[in-house]
Structure formats: structure tokens, C-alpha cells
Length: 141
Image 1 (spheres, rainbow, N blue to C red):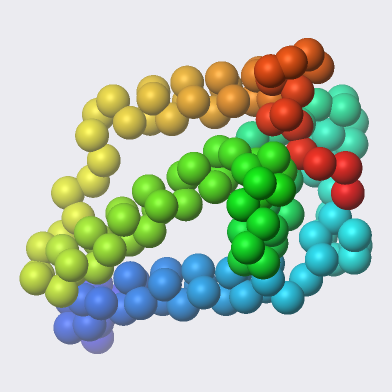
Image 2 (cartoon, helix red, strand yellow):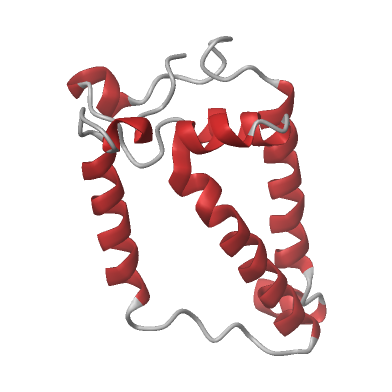
């Protein structure tokens, strides 16, 4: 049986697998001490240039959020925390569509350009060293 036929027989396989991966990632972020334990390598961009990429501080932000420290979570990576509810809502939509036998229609045509603008804008502003933008840089590890 081909892979496509298997996936059609089990339409919720991919959403369930993605959900399990998300729960495992959350547990990993909760259990560890990112930035202090050395279990993740440093960001290559930050190591070479000293600049923060859009993902810098993301694991620490999730760790802080999982431990109830919303202020530290936003300070470590406001973009990650801001996009987390969007990701959960998209996952729920995807799961419902698959359950109802529909294939996800994909993203709107404007979404890649909007995502690029947000990522570049966030990266640029979090590397400014003056108020009010300096709070976007992650907390020291």
C-alpha cells in the first residue's frame, strides 16, 4: 500500500503526530534549563556576529512560559510567545479539516511576504540597543 493511500485511510495521523511533537517539545522546554545547561548549541548568527536572530531566546521563552513567568517569556522572545496561540489555532483548524475529510487548502498568497516582513522587522528591532527596543533582546543566559 502506498504512503498516500495509508494517509487517506488515517486522515488524523499527521495532525496527531504534530500534536505529539508539540507536547514533547513543550515538555522538553519545561524540563530543561535552556541557556544554562548547555543542552542546546548557541545560535550560530549570534555567536559569529553578536546579533540576535528571530529565534534567539525562543526556547528560554517557552521555558519561562511553561513555568508561569510571562514577563520573562516575552522578554526572551516576544515573537515566539505572540505566535504560539496562532500556531495552536492553525493546528486545531488543520485537525478539524482532516477529521471532516478535507485537505488543508494551504495558506493565502500574501502570507509568505507578511511572514518575511514580520521576521525581518522583528530581527531589526530586537537588535537596536536603545529604548524602547532594547527590551526585545533576550535576557542574558
